[in-house]
Length: 244
Image (tube, rainbow, N blue to C red; front, top):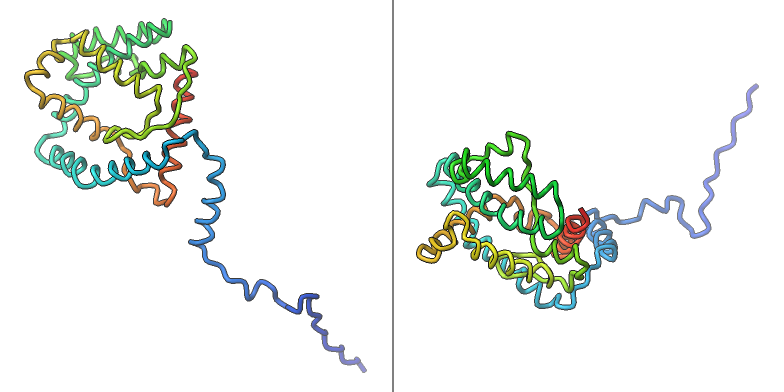
């Protein structure tokens, strides 16, 4: 005769719970946010003007939402894609002028030759830069500015800044923007700077094209800590660009 097995006795945990996790409440959204908040220490950037920068960031957010993007959408609506491409190529070709100047100032011989080749090819074969045959020929677009040049010579970045409409920057790069704009105006490549003085709408078109070709959208990170993330990404990206 088989004896009946004795029932298994449940032994409580010392704290009195047999299933401690059963009563544990879990809020995925809140926990993810708390985890994100705790990880922000790794994103620290020198930002003594943070209070002001946040106000400017908020202004840029609303300006982008209420003014800039509607204008860009209107621009896309009234112009065919080949026209927008030509406009972008034209202003990109103008941008190779400060690219070349800063490559020379940093003694980057290969980049200087490539940028010179791009300017010659796109200005001639590309008809003042409306087309970009240089890229198809293997002459890649380079990005050099005076902020990088200052960094090359050891000038520190300084405090983080958020510029109205222009967005993330720092003290060094803001000075670099002024230098690049002045240099481009003085060089007056293709007489564009002089024509722009009589037709300021060219400045507006360039600003619209810049926003049109920039993929970033405020709020796309879906995070309450977007400011900190943008600040960190910009700062680290600039470090990499200076070190190249």
